[in-house]
Image 1 (cartoon, rainbow, N blue to C red):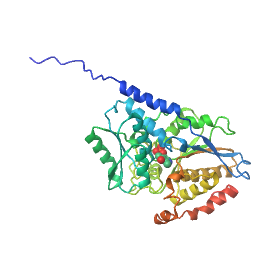
Image 2: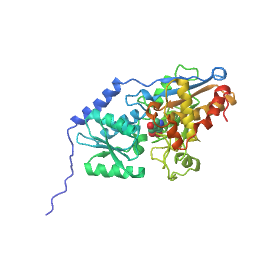
Image 3: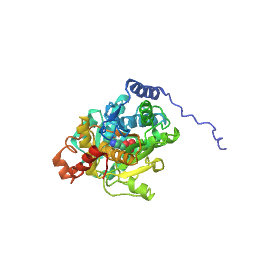
Image 4: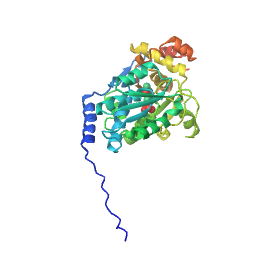
Length: 369
Ligand SMILES: *Cc1c(COP(=O)(O)O)cnc(C)c1O
């Protein structure tokens, strides 16, 4: 006679470690301050007089130096609360950039090993930054191999592949919890035009644009969302042609944004407009803003500003007053050997000087080519 099938299965485990891990992340957030919303000085001759304002959400002041600090915190909480990470888990990510730096910080906070899977071409300074946060770097020959290698490593180590490109949009609390959108609208409250006409962001995972786009709809704001995209990125053609399967076969030259494939976290349905920005124009705008602000900004901030300037000129031409908000995503100090180095720019075939006159013209007249 066969035994009757059991109707109860119990896999409950003590949650002491997970409870404490969540507490550590919450405590870290509580000790941290929110990032500033800076006013970007537009020339008084046409900016102030026409009632136009530009703001920069300064994401460089996070402990790990970029907007990826928010993402890493959300990804760890999401994984912990989904039961994907415990005290024995090796945490693995496919990233050579700022995400790995921020995730290494949170892994160290929880006492977990962290491995970043990255192309062997990754610069020594990036590797040093990840290692200084306690992370380990694992190399592959081609950048297209990072995803499969991260999955393989997770299997081999019994670890967890945190997968920013899939999980960015779902790990972030889009309704609030002081996400980047709620923080921007809160900080804008006492401004002359508190509801921005436009928010301008780039897309790497697409998580930031997804969070802002959803929040705008949820709070029923009139703000429109503009996503700026560099050369060689699949996001723009996918959006323009309404085809999520576009692949470009080459990598973005603007660190942090633009992808060769449409990442799952990019949600085109919440984006009102997309604009392609030439790579050399992004660099020219990053240089220009670095002079105006007296501090170096990263190249994706240049892309953001190029897009924001175009929208402000459009508003001015139409006689509108109002505000535009964009992001200072990371500091230019990370790029002294690349975007702020003439030899490197030449080696990449990037000539920002060709775009300087457009910026000078805009400063003078508020007009855009
Ligand atoms: C990741 C990143 C972005 C884009 O943010 P996503 O939320 O991933 O789309 C922009 N700039 C920099 C410097 C980044 O690291």
